[in-house]
Image (tube, rainbow, N blue to C red):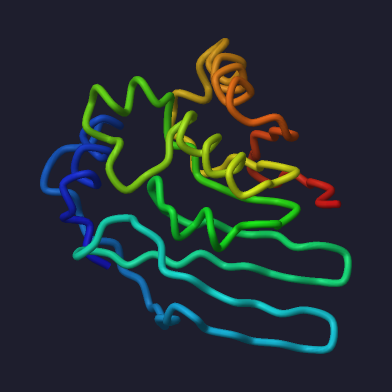
Amino acid sequence: MNLQAPAAQNYHVNEGGTLPRPEPNYEVHDIESGFIKETKSWKITTAKVIHAQPWLESIAYRIETKKGTIVLGGDTGFDPNLTKFAEGADVLVAMCWDHQDVMDSNGENIGVLGTKNVAKIAKQAGIKKLILTHTGSWALKPGSRERAIGDIAKIYNGKIIFADELMNIELW
């Protein structure tokens, strides 16, 4: 995994790190866009989404079951491909790195989703429930989540959930 993308460097510094950002040690098996795995009770498909190309590729997952459909957006920015891929899903799990205005001013708005852009994708795709994950440290500040929910709700009318570690969420 290469974390030398300019936005990844900005995130690292903005979170208190120093450059160069150290590389993690991972063992990975890449899945290509369009991957399909299917059983009698579920189907998984994948789609490439915008993130930090050419340094990193990112994939979204769509899981369809008899009960409903969930899309895991992965690390991505504002991407028409994700909007199309998520169309008609019941649930979208999407990153929400920070408030859109903060990201627009500090250079972190490329390849990642902020409050307003995640709301636009959820609205355009017709999502019923939006689960926000992969948030920055801003989400821990008093009043910050409420502000984010307010900004998102101005664009998107569905249910909004901020995910926390080990949180159980009823999907349907």
